[in-house]
Length: 176
Image (cartoon, rainbow, N blue to C red; front, top):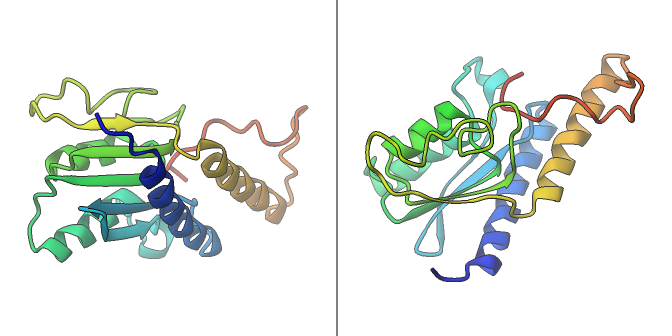
């Protein structure tokens, strides 16, 4: 297996820029880019609230833009970079679209579908091999999520301080 550390960090930083767009739109800040042969072919960020669509997760939107770019729903040879571990719905879409590799930032302790909570990818019924790498720029990815939830609590007049620092909310998720 090749050492992809530098490329993984480079493309995760692009996914973080997408997550920042979601933050600015008051969406849960999760961003995603899809890369084939070193070129970004799809990108997106959560737009659940804006589109009023529970499936408008960063990964789903990115898969759609990548498929449009390739004019093919099969994303063989592609790597999906996302700031938070994909949920089971997104992990299923990753399998169905034939993404070859998933790189995520922070694990999702509530809804993680790539092994943290459940594992939709490994040993899947479709018999697809998908490499999964977690923890790339995890602190930065989690930091953006924590800042978002802290800001949302402050805007609602809730310090979130229930005997702790205010940042001990349940693990991040794509769910509102």
